[in-house]
Image (spheres, rainbow, N blue to C red):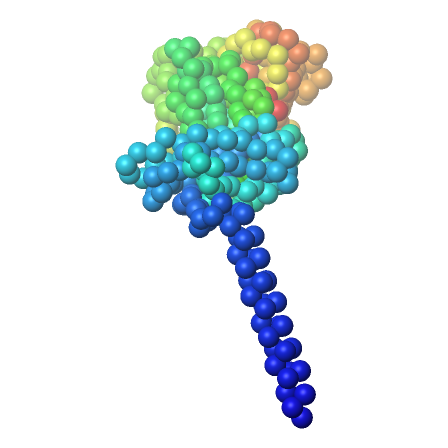
Length: 416
């Protein structure tokens, strides 16, 4: 029993000696790394941010408490790449802001540490950021235009389609030239669907491109290429003189007059030498264009009222709404009459008698007017392939007790 006790005492003493030796050894190892002193850490960067850009990032943060910090080191690609950013400390809070360039489009894991002049570092901070480049750029598409039109007062209206905001789209730039040859750039937010610009230079094109941020914190804006565009519809109504009611007469007598700025042939002057403009009768509005035959006045054969203008090559729309009464056109014109809204090459409209206008080689377009048509359907679309002189207006052959009230004339050019 006594021997067993001695054995246990000896074993305990041996274990104690080993433990003391081990602790002594560990203490020595610690001193190897601290050179005999305590570990000294520098203060880490506060409010650290990495902002993405085009093949680059921007790093931002604050140095607040540690006056010894002298540089910032940023590592990535498992420390195969790094940058060193000197820091000149002041007595207060210092802002650190710098760019790291030449980072092709990818996702990067960054390690950030501060250092003092003795090489002491802060604890590591880890942050992930993505850069954007050719792949993101290739995914971008310009904002679509629903329609664009240039009005007679030379104001350009552009109606935009909505965009997918997840693409990063936030605005569209429009560049245009005004009537004084001054170029303007307007930034249209993606939430705005219509833009109206005044004093647009007729005959000019406008340019468009769209702007994108891949994320809200991105430091670089991405752009689609500028594309030059014509207004899709150009209102050229101003080329037609005396184009709407109340129409103006060059001469008149009583109810009837002859239109100013229009050519009216003798066949239409069937009211004692006047005709074309009606100053009002029978509850109809005054100062309309009305070609009336009968009720004591002669029928009209090959009557013509027209204007001649010069247009560039393109596709055009000529429109002349008529006065409606109830559900039908307020007109006595029937299929036995040959009444046309017409456009033709040259300086005069073709004859209408027997419908020959419809096959005349100079005719560019026509709409036959009858009392069963809709009041808004007197529309002609025509195309010319070169700049040339064209004539537009009314050519009519009509029988007894016929009439029809034209309210206005408009002309538009379609570009696409």
